[in-house]
Length: 465
Image (tube, rainbow, N blue to C red; front, side, top):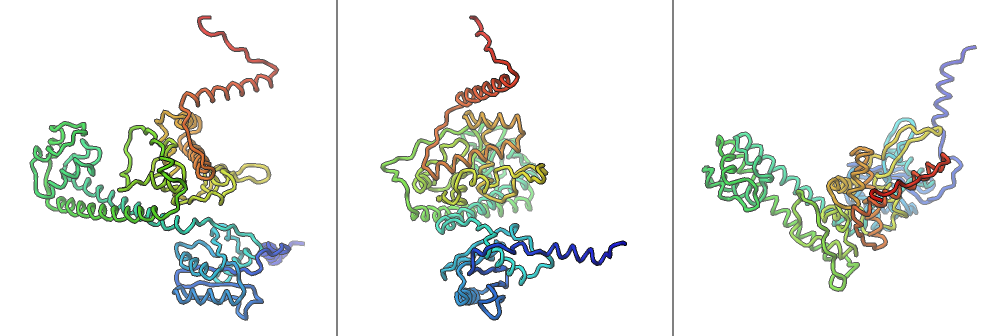
């Protein structure tokens, strides 16, 4: 007898709505869930705490305080919310000021709500998952690190805006066939900016403009003069003038931002006194372009508040170091081991397995500025004459560039973790040390393979013996 299709669909629906928390012991009895929105927040508490266990509150500051007082009256001790944009940050601060334990969960960890999704159901689902301890608390650094991070991110935005102004000037010059960028690598340098300012003032003689050539410029005076011969167009000169004015404005804002960063770093607690423990000599870097450094001793500040000099690691300059510190903080106790730290950064393999078979290989998709900075540092090892550089080149030849970059970023993350947590100092052993160590590893592997075949390795006699 054929089955009724309606019964079959009803059976599948019942199975799909099984309560996954049934039978689990509650870990957070006094828990609440909050569905965060741009204009309205929905809050759910246990059903026995209020006649209306689900209520909505506005996003104004007075509404947030009213929500916190209601949660306290409901004897709530811990709340959980999703990291929705930046709407949760103000709510986090208000709830924390009332003595509540605030947990921020990743949205991808809560996307298991069956059926139609509404704001009311979402906050109830969050409250239920948090009651049974099924959500992991997202990482949030200390207050002083968050302040530093805000300043540094603002500085990055200003630097990016200034770079865009340079691109606009270069495009306008190219449209006028002013090929200055072909003879000067960076038109925002001393020579390039002097020439641009003279052009804006009205100078058009290539010979006079080429007199601004700096001694370090490889191109000759004649080459620069020939590159400055073009078609002067008023509308494009207007673009150059306005872009140059904006560039100067952004440079002024960057200096003001550097002052704020300098003042804030001075206020942070020092782990080492540079007077009694001077900062080590900077590691020699290979040739290449580097971003402009801030207008204060950032390397000295980072050494004072961390107790170690992360720039001793080859490929990690002061900009990479400040990005990592501003994103992960100074307290490494948040991660039990360096493996946990690398996994949090998304630099570890995350193989999807089912039935004993690997369905997908690769790393988790993690949006993290610290991981991005470490990947940039890893790629800069391509021409390094250090042990890390030799390792990266060997991995690149065997795995390819993308996987090698991730693998070396993983290695750099481990080194940073050890230095920040245990105060260890990094000493580069050199490329010869790495090659000798790699050779010994290959010999041990070959001897093991030979023993498995009931054979023995016999070294060849040295040449000339």
